[in-house]
Length: 270
Image 1: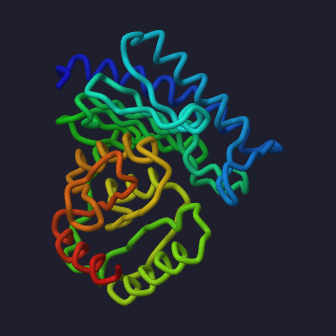
Image 2 (image 1 turned 90 degrees about the vertical axis):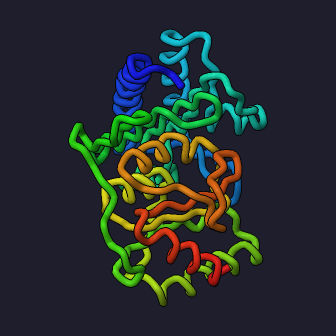
């Protein structure tokens, strides 16, 4: 693992460029958007592409030997292989549908993995001016203030966040809605914010107690936020209860007190 000095340098550079990209998003948020479709409901805008170019150019200037995986470049060129090399994994605009509709849950996600393990995470929502940050072993922060997961120990007192994903075939939709219907009996309520990264950061700062998503876009949706959850005292795992795999497009998060009950509820809802 990189030594703390390096992690701190990586974090500083990531925060700097996240704020630059955030300014591009903030300006674009209040303007007419030019939208393309990646699927029936999966959208991409000029802002996504501009932000990814800005972020990668900045990171490559500082860390030319590092590897890079981004949502828009990967979407255009096929899946990039995650190796043990230091790798920046970037979602330039998580919550594109929210962005297009003027719904303020949008963010820049910049994560760094070393030996396939996320060690630096920056998630920045420029519309609400919230900057979530963490490095391995050094705690998690929101706008510079330490954050912790909630202390709820009963599912019935927990707020659950999830996402419906972008697939609209009947089998996927039935599985998604059946799962939500089952879980609604066991938790206080359910929210869909439209951003996987912000759903995870919500667990990190205690706004929501539980999060899961099955079938999200790729590692760029989670690489930054999983560091923030772990450093805030949360647990990250596969919805089946197995270990989290950053390449599997399946993630769940909670505070440690409700993890077992949450896994059981997810298994019963499948």
